[in-house]
Every structure is written in C-alpha cells, then in structure tokens.
Image (cartoon, rainbow over all chains, first blue to last red; front, side):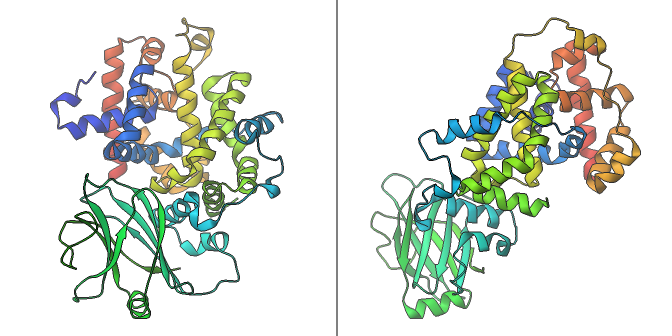
Length: 240
Length: 179
C-alpha cells in the first residue's frame, strides 16, 4: 500500500500511515492493522498521537449536538449493571492498591500537569505531610514505575506501570544521592503495587533530592550490594 | 469548563470515580455526540456509537497519561476514531445520495479561526497553502472520515491519484506546521 513511503526510511512510511489513520482515509482492514499497532508498538502510537495533535484544531468545526436522554443510563447499565445505581454508594477500594490511583498520578506526571491540580482529589485533605512523587523511566527501556514517598508512613509506595523483566531476573530499587554509592531498597515486584519501608537516614536523603533507580539483577537481588545489571528506569522525586 | 477541569475529571474517571464520570459525560457528551453524528450521519447509530465511546473512556481513561493531546481533543479522538471504524465496518455504500448532494466542507470563516486561537489558526493557514480541492479533501476526510475510495469517487480521480494527493498534502501540512 505504500507509494511514496517505500522509498523513504521505514519511519517515514510509518509516519504516513499514522497520518492516514488519523485523517480517517484508510480501509477497514488497514485501520484494524493500525489499531493493533497502536496497542502494541509505542513508537507507532507516538506518531499517531503527534498527528492527532497536529490535526485536532480541525475538530473545532464539529457542531455540538444533544444525544437523547436514554444514552447515559444505557452506558451505566453496560458498565455498572451489577453495581448500585448511585455513584455515591459505589464502593471504593483502598487507594494504595488501586491501579487507577497510580495511573492517575502517572497521568499527571507524564502529561506534565501540575500535580497540585490533581492532588486535592487524590488524597484526603487532612494529610499535609511530605509527599514526593517520581516517575521512573529511561529512554533505553520500556520499564516504568511510579514511586510515591510518604514521609508520614516512612515508606515508598511503588507501582509497576509497564515493562517486563527477562526470565530469571529481578528488578531492584536503588536510592542514589549525589556521587555516593547507591543504597539498595530491595527487590521489587513486577505487575503489582508495593510499599518499601525506609529508614530515617534514607528518608532524609529522599527529602534532600536523592534519585531512585531500578536495575536488572539476578534473582533475589544484587549479590554485591551494588547494582550489577543495567539501570532500566530512573527518576527524581518531586514535591507534591 | 476549563481544560484543566476536564483533565481532573479524566484523572478521577481513571480512578473509577463514578461521580466524576457522570460529570464528564454531562460536560462533554454534546461535543462527542456532534462528532459521532457528523461521521455516521444517522442519529440512532451515532447514539450507539456514543455509548461505546463512553464505555471506552471509562475503561481506558488511564491512557490519557501517554497522550500529548488536550483533554477535550483526546476525548474527541476516541469518538472520531470509533465512529470512523463503524462507518468502515458498514457495507460499502453505493454512490449514495449524500455524495451527490454533499458539497465540500466550507472553509471556516476568519471568525472561526480567530475564535479557536493560534494553533487552530495555524492549521487553517497551512491548509490554505494547499490547492483548494486538496484542502477540501483533507477537511472532508477528517470531519466525515471519508475513505480514499469515497474521496476518489467524489473528486472523480483514480484511487491511487487520490492517495498520492492526500499523502503529499499531509507531508506539506506537517512541514508547514513545523515552520
């Protein structure tokens, strides 16, 4: 299906497909293929997002129209058929175990939004303790963690957002302050949220701007007490 | 409602906050329904599509994190792409009445460009640099989700010609927007 694209580098051709997908001109089969790539190929998804941004002002031309009243109840039936009809009565899982909470925070961090905007909604107003958040990632890998340091509870909450480790390897969390040797905070799980306790000394370092990093280690963690494998994600804590 | 308020509602929706989801629906459903209706051109089908769109928003709200789109544009993109997938899934329409009656989408007047601000103004300026019928094809494709095949028929050119036109237009647009 490529005409001009096949002469250029692959990225150029991908960029054209992304543009055609966003413009809306592709056939059903081509769109299906593009949708699959958006879900599985982050580089392609990026190109699509860039074209969505470029062309989005054209959407101003869509006139608003009121849907009939029956639509929202139908949506609610599809989503919450077994739940109670009242939003207020919807059960709320513990916030620290909610993937949505972590992703919501990540959304704010990644989108570069002031976290202060979202924060009043994310935590009970009574807690005015020190909280720091870091999005741990690296260009060279697709491993992403979100870390939230909670001074009041002396721990770092950690949520694995994406990226797999190789078989027979573990991820280990490190705290790095300036030029000092990294301090291990232990092996961390993949695919789940967890909390890691921190000592008062480490707390002080965290509050003074230490960096968190995730490295790939043999099962059970580094045998030497220092990182031995590649660092797959890193980030510094920002005050929220 | 300010973009940052919509952002809050999307964030809270990703946390499975139903009250936020309800408010998000109230604030954005007219715009998104407008999108579905324009693309699908059938009220009943547009309402079915709108249901699907909000189900997607509820289940995929966390994906907003990895997009550079403004919150309302992100929502519009979900509605647009879903509606386009739906018309593509329809039986290919014969050269229908719409094609005959439909004239190219008018260029929004200067007031529209002024209202939607700089960024929007820029894309309209860049579209003006294209030949008229090509700019019209880009607008038509974007707003109505017309396929290469439908556009080729409307402009009475071979499909591959239409493909080449639009690809060149898209590359010119990108170049213009990046100037």
